[in-house]
Amino acid sequence: MKKRLPKIFESQTVSYLKASDIKVGLLVNFGNKSCEIRRLMI
Image (cartoon, rainbow, N blue to C red; front, side, top):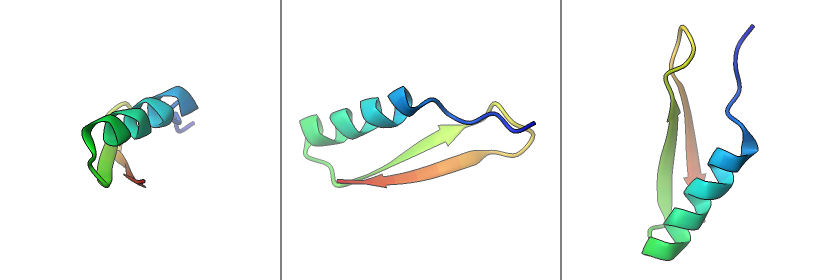
């Protein structure tokens, strides 16, 4: 079964993007057999 990233990590990344005035960020999960990459934009 594939592990999903908890929503809190997505929320935290969006907060960091807003605080640093950066528009795009990547959230990377190495906890699976294949890497999960989420592109987040504000």
